[in-house]
Image 1 (cartoon, rainbow, N blue to C red):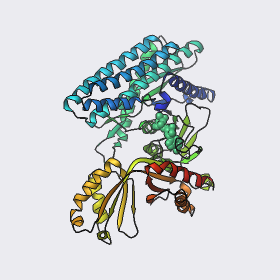
Image 2: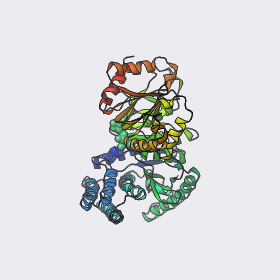
Image 3: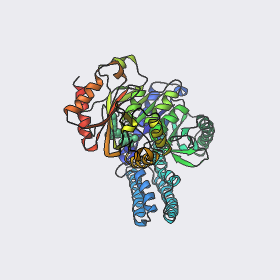
Image 4: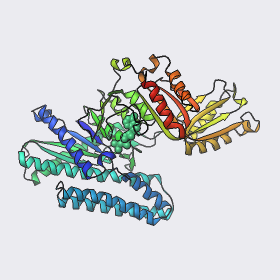
Length: 516
Ligand code: ADP
Ligand code: MG
């Protein structure tokens, strides 16, 4: 197997769907020319996100839930109508261009219409209760992937049928697969759940049997002899999963990359390609740093750190299944709209890698953050302050992204999201109310909005002066650094700056390392 994942940007409209179909077919073609024995050909698992564009389907769905919880029925109607319009327009364009038969397109339109009716029913409950339960958001937000994958599946299947009619070579059967039939998450696990690999494997086995039977039936009902050369491929919903109770959940925002990697490991695939709207992993977000450049090779760890610090091109969890797999699975990042470009390869770091002249590979930033400063003389040398502090934060579910402690021990600073910072402040004030009363703790201050800027690279620990260069670049640009931190892996250095200075900060450090 090989896995190809297409993000929302790759399926934003009918033209994009056609582009995706061509890429998938090209992969089948590559298969055939490099091998003649059908048993050697690769099966393809295509993983699809919800239709992107402005606004994205997933946002429309989530907005409709929010609108329902505030009983804004007009807004609910508006969001859901736009979803229908978006999908209808796409399907209509595929009919007009004779890419999809009107029967198939009408069937799909009916499916989507019925789903939207179901969503309306669900949202009625939300409005009655004036309450946006997480479960409901998880269920509703996952519909977009089921629609985009059914559209892509139908498109690939009809085109495949046409090719087969004309050349009678190999018939490629595409099967739509709702990932909730396979991917199972234990939500009770601390922090965002964990994949239940054994359950997934078991479910995949039975799903594969069912799909094989269904394909046989398809051949029979279409009067095609089973002895005819044919292969089965899947078109799989990204983002969605089931929990251990069989209830719909998701892998969280931008989780389709993670879906692709999970399917990659389950199918023991040879590689995973993430198709998106940029040429690969770049040295920085091209929207922020116009002269960012492509990184042909990135290690798993570098990709993870870049993603953790905000590089949206790949979800930070995506690397885990690829690393856990035996053998490990390389991940390619490629551009749907520049498909001849080889893109970036994410794999274990090779020697050429640490040798490369630039010890820093890339820069990223997380926006909409806040820092919390806890200061006071009573913090000097007192044991257990940090433990109590971070214990409190953990019990409140505050996600700490970066910690920095001044060497004087007069203060502890940590970064978190703006929403969590307020929760944190209240919780800390409660936990340390005695120390505050005795003035051992003088200030608990929140500074927002901030950005965390990070430099990432495997070679960092081998080179001296990286931190110096990083901070002098910020100093030269007269950027006020609010907190600094170096990851224990020495694979990143990060700084917190005010949000309105973050683009300038990113450009300054990007330029400093580029000139080296
Ligand atoms: P998709 O819909 O394909 O999942 P995303 O919008 O999630 O696409 O991710 C692709 C975007 O990530 C790019 O358009 C780019 O603006 C952004 N991005 C941020 N940092 C980087 C980086 N270091 N390299 C490449 N792209 C990046
Ligand atoms: Mg993405």
